[in-house]
Amino acid sequence: MEKTMDRISNPLVINHIQAEQCSFSQVSNQHDEYLSAYPWLQHYEEGVPVQLEFPNRPLTWLLDKTANHHPNQAAFIYYGTRITYAQFSNLANRFAIGLQRLGVRKGDRVAIALPNIPQFPIAFYGALRAGAVVVPTNPLYTEREMQHQLADSGAKVIVMLDTFYSTVRKIRGQTALEHVVVTNPADFLSSSLRLLYPLQQRWSKDAQLGLTNHDFAQDPTLHNMQPMLVSRTKGGIELFNLPVPTRSEDLAVLQYTGGTTGLSKGAMLTHRNLLANAIQTRNWFPGIQQGVETTMCVIPFFHAYGLTAVMNVSILGAATMILVPRFKAKDTLHLIHRYHPTLFPGVPTLYVAIMRELLQYPPANGRENLMQPSTPPDMGNANRTRLRISSGFALGRHSYSLQSIKWCMSGSAPLPAKVQEDFEALIHGKVVEGYGLSEASPVTHCNVLNGQRRNGSIGLPLPGVEAAIMNSQTGDLLPVGEIGEIVVKGPNIMQGYWNRPEETEAIFTNGWMRTGDIGRMDADGYFYVIDRAKDMIIASGFNVYPREVEEVLFEHHAVLEAAVTGIVDSYRGETVAAFVVLRPGIEASEQTKQDVIAFCKEKLTAYKVPKILQFRDSLPKSTVGKVLRRELRGGPIL
Image (cartoon, rainbow, N blue to C red; front, side, top):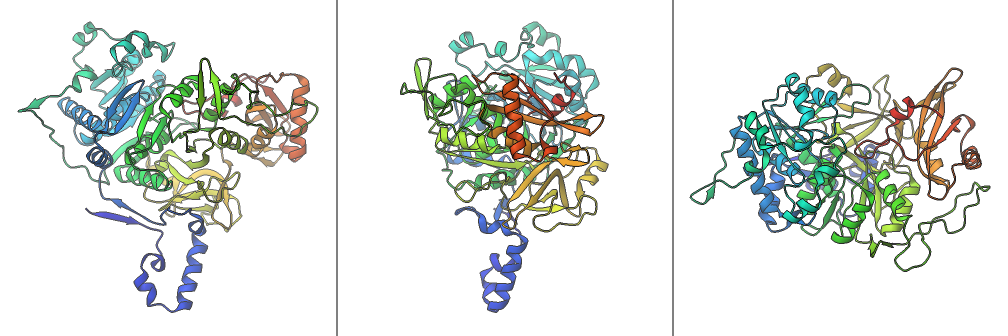
């Protein structure tokens, strides 16, 4: 099998024969120069490779390989329904045939607007096997958002929930859509659960009634997905006519960015980009056992983080995926109790929500709820009260333990040290902060599981990833410790933005991709995100980074969630505003507010202390759990 090698090239490390021909002084000097350029390598934990080989294969090779070696391993568990990897692969083949019959050819775009139900990975790998380019799309998008992505990508087909078809029907004339394939969350449930647990009604209060046979009869371009998944054999053999062979450098996915500064852009990710990042992420966790792990799949697959770090990494490791169409803390706890997942990729707000749910219930042993402060909170004392946490809780008639979870990779948003500490105590496993962006497939950095973790750090670059700090104005790389823009390069970096050459040119400088994040690197190669450039607050000429203020707020015993943003101020230009969700049982009083502000004054320079502090029942979040600062900035200040 042909392979390609992506290395941070140093002949001394790679080729020992050549090293033997060098004098000791030459070897020593080269080694010192190498570690000076890539200091993070010496801090990789045991078992993490310095370099990786990436097969010169399309992304579909992941499923081919796992279905061949672990055919009877459960690929998905979906509310009691189990689908093996062999079944998954066959269903993807059938869907590929179905798409070909609809006229899909190599390079055509197929949008997938589905939650985490079996139909998403089936449609994803089926579309890739048909040679198509997948456009993952949020099923809850508004008409405007959906129209933009469908029109911008030129999608020929969309696979979506039947209950949201009305959204596409209204904007279809403004797109290039030729066919709409609909499905239902209940299609892979047992017959009894279809009656007892109508997911299509629970998905959203805005969902419409499902389509009827009359609707399909009236529109020949409207198709039900289920008949496309039925086996069609010739002489007992299923036939699958491959399109022109897909190459690793071919486009696989148009991953649209969040569009926080305007309309979203499609990051062009090749098969090689996505395969490389799945392999990079999988190898960062050497303790993962092939064909043994179970992954809690809460992060949506239509998000870059969910696509790679949850779905593709699970397939690469032949792990069983517990599919969660929509996150609800109590439902997730039931699933953890029933299926004992070992891997739980998530985001900070997700872990906070689970801890918040457990606050409402007593521990299974009948003692005091150890999620509560170990001493009654003294609202006149700003000192932090440490939480003592139990690993078992009684919810209803059942006892719940989270100790099957070995590790959690937290991404998409900064991980407060307090959240990390409390959730680790709860699961008795490890929670590590990772970092990435859609344009990087998406993971570029992560903290080590068993080595030295540094509070506030996003960790070390993954194998094959190079990272540096750049002066945004000059394009020069900055020395250790200096603050600038984090830039990256590697086999996982996108090819550019779809149909946006000017924006593509702007994001690349001297071969480096600019992340838009302000940060620094320490002498050991650990990177720190100080904040997003666009989120930085400039108050009276001083730079204030929201993450720093949020970390302090999370240290206060009364604070469960916190978000900080800048609010326009006629005198200071911007002023620091904090939005806080209090722990259950804490009164949202003026006294509490003054205590929190006093605590901040002890920890922060005066210009960083929030001038506005508002208590909220909840914070606005995206579907992935990222706090939406723009909504806080634009909302009313009470």
